Image (cartoon, rainbow, N blue to C red; front, side, top):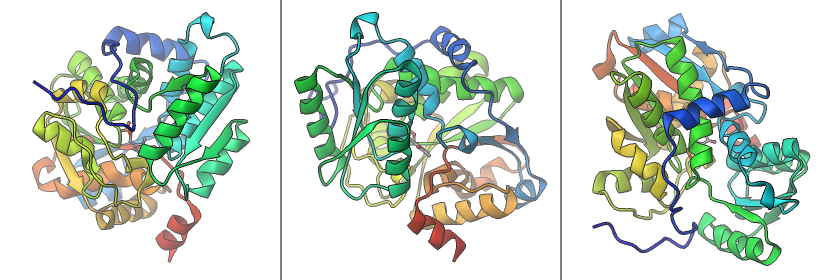
Length: 331
Ligand SMILES: *Cc1c(COP(=O)(O)O)cnc(C)c1O
């Protein structure tokens, strides 16, 4: 039996069933008018460096600079009409925030984002430019979540969990449909993990359309909640020490964890590995990423002996590097 206690930094695990491949196909039709397919390129110099045929899926070119917008558009399109003019409210360090703010603007819904103190200023500016209100509250995501929950209750807003939402996972699944339609015989795909929506979606889609393709998750060794929960089979909380804000999640989420049972493996990487991979993407793939956006490649580099001569995809999940990160990358 899994423990039934619920960490305080998220709503009770949604009773909603996990999305199916049919939900992902529906999401693909739904987002098509708003988001074109993202490119996936293979770079000869990068291939030589890794010793494999590497396909880089470029989610850094999404209008919000990260893959999450696929999930935000899908989730908000599916909100019941009874929602009326009530707003949506969520908590996030940044890219989930931009995804929900982007979708709320498209569908004309008021949107509030609660962020913990000391947020990435580039992400705050991006959310505000999309017309959402930002409230800074709490030293950590745990405290920001508590504030978000009471604020949503007070206002009658729809509280959106960063991950325990079938609509988010179905939307993110469209990334892996595009990837596997483009290169159906991939041996493996490396997916960066914070809350786990990406890894869950990859497991769901690969199982349905390319069961030979291994899904390998990558998380920060300095924020390993999803990894440790996956290994132990029970949700655990872990301190967050990574500077990669896209991966800075302190607890596991039930819905993605249930789908992540389909993972082949789960790799932990340190911030120095993320920085090295970020530099490789800059110099060998002409691509500027935030640290989390380089995590998948960092995971592949950590395991490259296993994949010599194979066909492997890495998700370049986001581009939103803050000023401090940029200075360090270019120093
Ligand atoms: C959110 C995010 C991740 C992690 O994705 P999850 O679905 O939360 O596991 C990785 N990279 C970037 C750039 C992100 O924004």
